[in-house]
Image 1 (cartoon, rainbow, N blue to C red):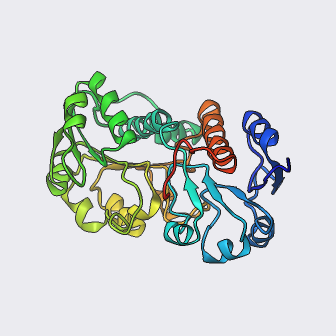
Image 2: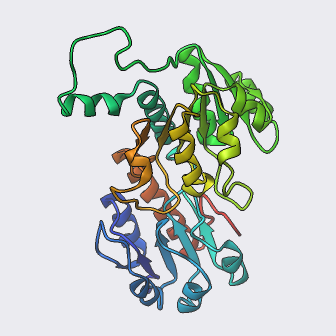
Length: 322
């Protein structure tokens, strides 16, 4: 029996490649680093029944028209703001993502950014590198305490709940904001539901884990930062466009919030001249929320499982639109 043709926009970890090779004929953009150019993507889907895409690959009407045989788009990500779900639905194309497998890893990064920002870790290393570490004095490199403070998580999905669970070992008071209160979140984490403004004004640390949508785009700007404590730490491990970046820069320059830990940006990748990188009170990393060997391998494997399932007439593990 002829194997279905699939197009991959990157070479994947070995386990995922082997799974796909057993069931499909693979074509791919064979470069681990450079994004698949648009022209190569459109050409790649011309005969494909399946597409395994990344967040950097835009799946829209143009692509769907170029791939008339497509049956599934398997996105190797939890987010799917790169995909026009409505267009896929109209054309009967299944869309899947990779939820769950990166929950704990992303929550770990949120905590790494929180602690690094609160204790000025990057700033301290730069001080040493610049030869500025002199005699000890009482207020040298002082930060703020995380233990015993109040954590507010905006977005109580899988990642938000994982962030809240970790806080229990730090003796923190916990609050969360969601579209609606969630009794399961409250029962499992002990967190209290608060309206957004109340959460922002009362929290010592604010962590953002909401998905990007029309409702959340630009959710955090000058008004929201002005509500925070001058000693607050702001962490975003969700999506860059949720934050109005220029207004975050201005807020950090004004000292409210005191510091930030940022994994995601309005436009990615950013360059070395980005304004946030010039601020000593901002810890910035290049969208590495899921970046561990184990997690990236599980993401690739789940994306492959989704793709193979649909192309062999089975139910995919994590469907989005059909």
